[in-house]
Length: 193
Length: 122
Image (tube, rainbow over all chains, first blue to last red; front, side):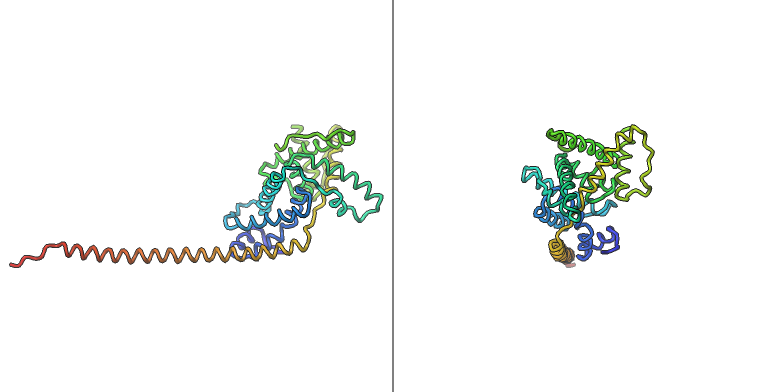
């Protein structure tokens, strides 16, 4: 993997296809994870990741490096792709929880797997009842492990707004989990903020 | 004010989970804060454990990388051709304008000479 900064690669990529390949290699895993959790299946994730990078390439000549990380540009494209995908299908995403969890707990004992699987299923189910912007925040924070500053740039908000949204998201999630445990339907909140 | 402090504490806790924070997670919490935030810390830790990064299939990532490199090559070549075309076009137009100016000047001079009345013989 290249040690060159994004800015150097972006400048080079205008005339050197190899530089764009290095940017792709640097971010494909994060973008794939993000899209996978937003769509819930590998097939659509692959399709949308391809479209995201092709769109980035198509508009790359007009891309101006203004100091924001290149990843923010890619996440914005990916975000729009996923939003269009949901609109086209007019349905909530169905996440293959079994597949997702097996990858993280397969090394453990069978009894531990069953117990942990149940807990994760409930938690991930609650996550998918959250409004899209809150799901996006959790994915960027926990899956892609971005800092608040990076998330703020991607979501077009201030760092303070991200911290506040995170607080409200955890409260809503805990509330949903309590209701789930008590056998009530999870609280359906406003879509987006 | 209290909400803002709570936002900060929760964010600092999660940033520390991923090692983003330079300082270790060391904040003195009141008993009330401990009661309020303890379950949220636990929830954040469960989320960290339950949302692992997902790797793209290697064959897919490799194949897409190759396709993109090919497209980038074509795009850069097309942009170069376009730049060269624009340059040649501009040079051609510039040359034509220059030639037209010279021809125009010659035509003008000839027409002025023809329009001048013939010199009177003494």
